[in-house]
Length: 347
Image (cartoon, rainbow, N blue to C red; front, side):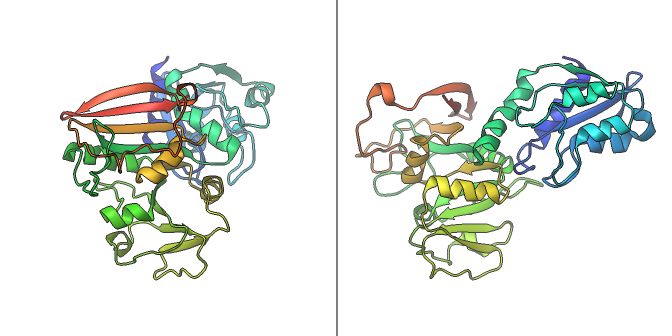
């Protein structure tokens, strides 16, 4: 892989989690061995990476090469097709790292007909950015990561409800960074009652995710600290039409049936492309048993809590046959000051 393609992929990685239902894309324009334009898709509805890079390059782009982490788009959305912009600037070559399977027309063909050489330079690193995006766009639900902090024996809390803190402070900092890379964080009203969390990103210049609360009955205690700041919007999903919002930044979303499918579809339609689930055993288990989960991140503390498992993070009403148990593959493991972070992908 060329250094210029590496730069394009790095730019895409830097904007991961801030492009809504659009993919994170990076682009580099090169002329005579020099970088003359850089771009990244910064926000849903704004200029795409290729346009950003070409706007920087201006006339220097003519006869040059553009490196893109994802195949340039060919459709009219909130912005015109990027292939049009590439043709207008007179580039001689386009190199991209991942083919966009969601496009309705072939960008390669359009560009080649305009006399532009096209090279597909596949990158596994870049594909990791888009695999879940392709699935999310097909099913019209967000990319979903479930995060769990637990003891070695799988407890999110003791049987009496004590949960602060199972994992260490370094894990908390890592979770803040995790929230930064997601559009929204989802939890249940039970977790609000038990832990009184804020779900903010307490890192310098961090992006605060939208905070989504599930409460079918709508028995919300607005005195909880999550409602006292306006760092990001709060969406409450409920079946209770009597529930009203006390503030403009708190949105009440009424659904006739609050099940995962209807909630996730609505969340996606509202522009959330990457969703982090930080919840108690009930909601966590519901996601783990579903087909909606993409990644599971478990933070293990080196302690054993014991008890009867009232707050075991994975609970089912029935005993699951081993052949039908949810299967995962381990993507990575990392030691965080004696706590272990395990990142897994749902098979």
